[in-house]
Amino acid sequence: MKKDKNRIYIFDTTLRDGEQSPGASMNPKEKIIIAKQLENLGVDIIEAGFPIASEGDFDAVRQISREIKKCQVAGLARANKTDIDRAWQAIKVAAQPRIHTFISSSDIHLKYQLKKTREQVLKEAIAAVTLACSYTDNVEFSAMDATRTDRDYLVKMVEAVIAAGAKTVNIPDTVGYAIPDEYGRLIAYLFANVKNIDDATIAVHCHNDLGMAVANSLAAVANGARQVECTVNGIGERAGNTAMEEIVMALQTRHDLFGLHTNIKTEQIFKTSRLLTQITGIPVQPNKAIVGANAFAHESGIHQDGLIKEKSTYEIMTPQSVGITDTHIVLGKHSGRNAIAQHYKKMGYDLAEDQLSKIAARVKDLADIKKDIYDEDLEAILYEEIYRGKDKYTLVYLNVVSGNVAIPTATMELQVDKEVVRDAGFGNGPVDATFAAIRNITKTNYQLLKYAVNAITGGSDAQGEVTVQLRYDGYSVIGRGAHPDVIVASAKAYINALNRLEFLQENVKAKKVKVE
Image (tube, rainbow, N blue to C red):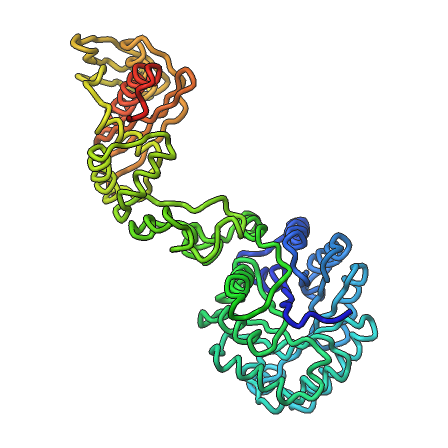
């Protein structure tokens, strides 16, 4: 079968190098869940772990080897017999097993870590590959710290391990030291000087210590490398590894430049990212490329206006291409009138120009003091600016008695239309008693869906903001109230929700909600 020279093989090391991230340890069951999703994603090789590291790692690698059928499964081994034998025992049940063996090649590692000569290390590399090849012809060799290795020595090592039978040779930037142009030149140098280089696939494994793992990997593939070692979300030792989603989407989005492709099912990328986050608990930063919460979110008015007219103006790939439902237009102080109008239209409201002017100003004012603006906020603004007449209910007076030796009691006066009505209520606590008093006065008993309290400012004198959600006859409304006394804020929020329900009952049933 003819080899596709334009295909980039994706070697996923999330379960090995990725698991070495602080706090990212996974149990065997969790590793299998991730491995199956990586198989669904379409990665070519799954590095399942380091079998010699522990019994748990050995068992996990062996279980993954049994379960995975569509991908190669690799086990990592240092360049010695014990490690290689152990790796083979773990992966030999795999449909497509691979032994991945490695040894350091830089003088700094040889001198301070291995305390061996170049000649000794070269012999050990050859012996390790030879032993691994006695188990399988699918052997990968890595020259650890290759980017800080003497070039001529690296050429000698690569040539020797290929001659010994390695089908893949990895040139790792183990400590994230390389710069893209420099790394690209190193790969090109190997292609120009390793006589038997066409007998193997050249791989790259980059770390992100200087923030250049993806850029370095792209420079390498531009110069002939055809396997990229990477992790989901870029997790890994120290600053992490090449991010799988970034390398894949860079190659796909800039196919015009690279002319290369992978077999990744890109629509599975976001799902895989979320699964890893849920299992490891390691969050993805909001501004992370491809899978971050803000990757397809737009707040700038200029950007929003362009996106509404034509998505390609400010999006170089579609969110659907990586498995995200849609673009997220974030309404905030930078949002333009067009974005605000379009968002209201999605909610079912067609705003006239004069109404849009009032509402846009309120949205921007709210964005100055509130980070996230939700549909309920927009409905509240619409209600206040366009629909709101005189409130049916207004708080006049509230007194609450509570404590560990008193029955919580709320005494209240509300203005109902033009009449002031007084009543009391009892409850399990001061808020429950307050809501009981309101229900007694208003003769209502709507379902309470949500009650939440947030401090608007810091300190013991913070103003409390209360949110209440009520449901009636298929409709739900949000009411909000703010006050230094959280009980008063609760009463105001509940009353605000009641007034909004009154509005809905009068206007929705009369089909007046939609602005004409």
